[in-house]
Image (cartoon, rainbow, N blue to C red; front, top):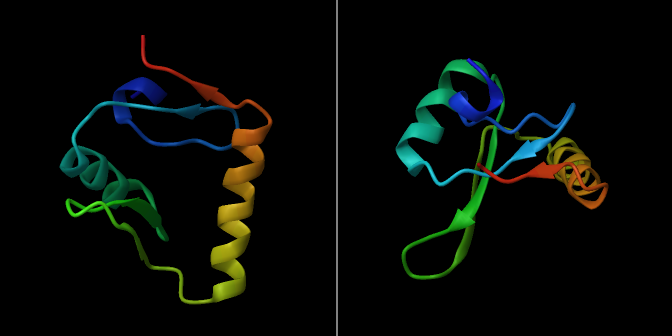
Length: 79
């Protein structure tokens, strides 16, 4: 599968945005990742997080790594 087909965010190279539904993203993530952080907005408009990462320091490290990737312009839109 390519980055566009599997709808997974790869921070090694570029972050991909997709319009695929949440269940598809979660299904693919469950097959690939050992640990995961999901940030999003619920149906009431509140920001929520679901994660398998128990250590707060490790959680913040993942979030900072993602932030730096985004700030460096590592994003691409679906075509």
